[in-house]
Image (cartoon, rainbow, N blue to C red; front, side, top):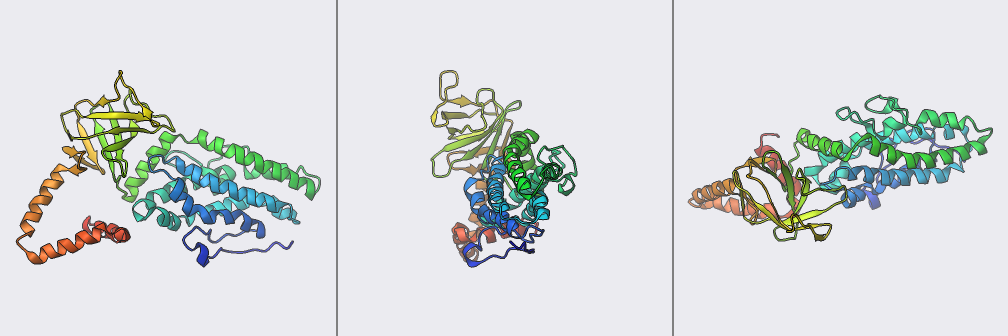
Length: 372
């Protein structure tokens, strides 16, 4: 088989909304094509598998596609007739993953929209290339430290250097192929273990929160209730009346495991200096009992944060920042005297409610915030 070089994959009509790795280079030609092909569905996986409340789920999204890509490449190894190409497999993986990281933004935007895509894109790059803030070498850094962002060598058992060492133990091309296949099997198994060891879910949560701040992404829908030594975060569950998911808990009575889903019904007004109750507590679908009751009362609230903004009170039943609501009513009262302006308000209200305008609305918000 003739190994052909190529520089980039191009989108076609069938997959123009999905990811296509750009500028793929190297000596593996057809093998690289097989490795890259599974990534065309990456955008769909971001949409279906990424969980906003669990940034660590992004590792699974990327590894799912990466393992499929390695499997596809392994199937093509038997067709290789060039020892140089066989030796270059791990280097090619590192190169392709770097291209993936540098071109991943468009497809994340397609999957999640402009509002969330910047922070998720940055986190994806951190997982693939590494991140200095949490001293994490990333997938590429494990394969080839020199190509990773941190340039740190953590002596990964299945690195490019060790791969070449193992391949050189083969006496002929056939035996070297056998070694390569076995090495890649071990590589896939150990990679997930190594990533879990190198970065904890808590570190991912913190990094994602920082990346959101750096990229100007607001925590839409997130509500923080803080009473000094304890803090919990909740988010409204769409389609459920007054039901909120507890996404973080500093309380010893509401403990969240990695795969746990805890929900509660919250109504009424949360005010600074006062307590609020979470009732009908459920954990993974079953009743959650605290001191014999399926309810939990906070301490006297010292801080209430809604969508990254600290407020004095918040009405859960209506989902309303009461200070903003009061000002809005006052402003609308003034505008009623001007029919022309009220007409514009009516048209803009219709515009806001149309889902297809979400990207334009995001741009308008930037202009209003003085960011454009």
